[in-house]
Length: 215
Image 1: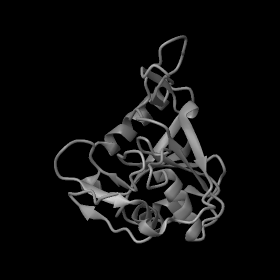
Image 2 (image 1 turned 90 degrees about the vertical axis):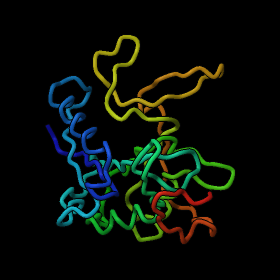
Image 3 (image 1 turned 120 degrees about the vertical axis):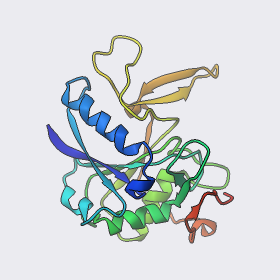
């Protein structure tokens, strides 16, 4: 089983919420043969000793999965989906923390924003995954690209209705009748390449504890 998936949690282990346990469950399902691909997920949190992302190498089949909670067009992610004490991080702080954790400029793999609605923009802002890609490009990371998703993501592999032998990572979408349809994550993803500039009103965001600044 190949270690080519890294769950990157841009919060400290104390702030990580359920993300670590969810990654461990994904590992367990993969090793048991219940998922379509036998992936081995490593977990790196912001503030872990060393430069963990540097050890990933630069293979094209490598994927970094950014863990966080979000909404369409929100340039921040949070470490908690519910009420209570949260920490919010804007897209630029997330990337800066990845760089601090050892992300190499020659990284060729995919950076997946495993964040609900991360491929959807709002009337004011580009999608979160798009902003991550643009900021990476601005910082000199020209080889990697990002992926965002079109709806709420399942935290762990799930069983899909129909003749599906394996468990899959899933996303909930709305059909033309406003009914929820659950699909494989690969059928609800959008790729971003970072070529566009960052809107000026988002160019200097700062993280904020316990509150989400207006967006």
